[in-house]
Length: 205
View 1 (spheres, rainbow, N blue to C red):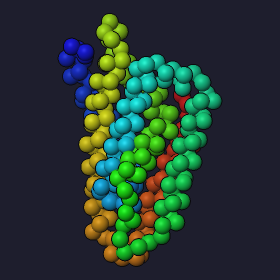
View 2 (cartoon, one colour):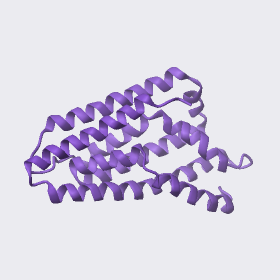
View 3 (cartoon, one colour):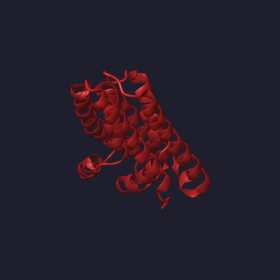
View 4 (cartoon, rainbow, N blue to C red):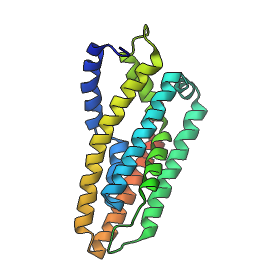
């Protein structure tokens, strides 16, 4: 087998505990759900999961070591992510209140989730710190990374998707009021600004 079954049994609950811990991915899906409804939240969730698999693949190939060793690369990726999140916040506020939640195509929401995940260099550093604890060096390394990454991504897909759908359902039920529409836009923008601030202030180590 690619992964020892005993190791797999130890990894699954650890991964689930991480998936259930509120973080940037969960907050982004929450913001997308509030901003544009359940479909957009699920598409963004899928984009985040795809981004996670990219990070895991890069780490498994050893390319993640470049990010860990090169401060300028870490900083460049981080500030691109900050700028992108601030742009999303501005676009949300610019849309203004409405009697309906703004329609966001699933492809666009997927792309936004993917970009937000890929421009968070902390993800690949986390993968490099967490996953190797379960990797058996006597077995092919990349397939093990992919298996563990798939488990993390699927868990995140379910948990973050539920959060986004729940937030989107609230938005759909309460969206009739223009005042609520303004609050909804501000809340979504605040989440994106908060994520940008979190990314801007994060420490490399």
